[in-house]
Length: 274
Picture 1 (cartoon, one colour):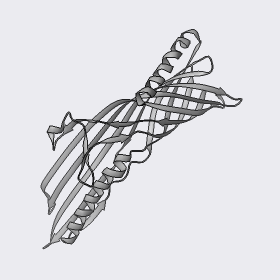
Picture 2: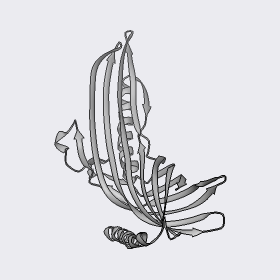
Picture 3: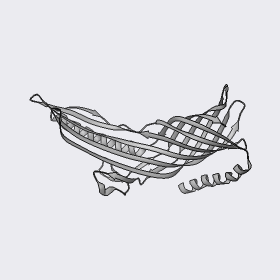
Picture 4: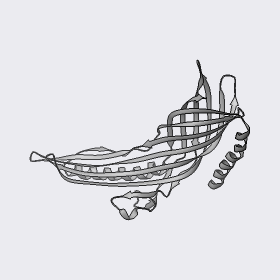
């Protein structure tokens, strides 16, 4: 079913290409910014729970041993800024073929630190880590224009070639009287590339006194999940390089990591028409 959706989108684009050759084409360029909200269910419901359970356990251990601790728990992935650009080809005054590129990233982190104070000596420790999820989509969208007196509405569909990078670094550090006595750092990086379909709709308003400029309010819904991320780097377990990215849930089960891209992207475009 997923492959069929992609084929339908690509076939529709190919059907419109002959029209481009017979119609007067109008070019426009736009810059955009907005918010993208991926569902990220696996990360939010399983990975966040696993790490926060571990952090709570070790905080209780250190507290019971007399340490003064401070805990910053791992947060769920939420919406974050998305920015990019787009080139539009308008033909027959009703159709737009858009080529777009964008960038989105999210960096959830966690930290457990504390200090043991004995005999006027301070033994400090810190266990911390951070994740990085970066998304780079190359989008192709076909839109149909619904003209009104003071504005235009449009709706369409397309697909994006997504390059998604997922990384995680973990740090353990101990200091006695300000001197480092132990330091350990591990790092993992993985990547996934995939074609993902989307739906698109929006409203375009002309900007008063700026004849060639317009403002677009755009809503895009992305339809797709990513799995089988390829591990590119793993300093703790180098034998995992080249394999699918796995994670451990709170029950101790090893599972294939999935990143759910499906979600809404709300954007504002400033467009210049040539």
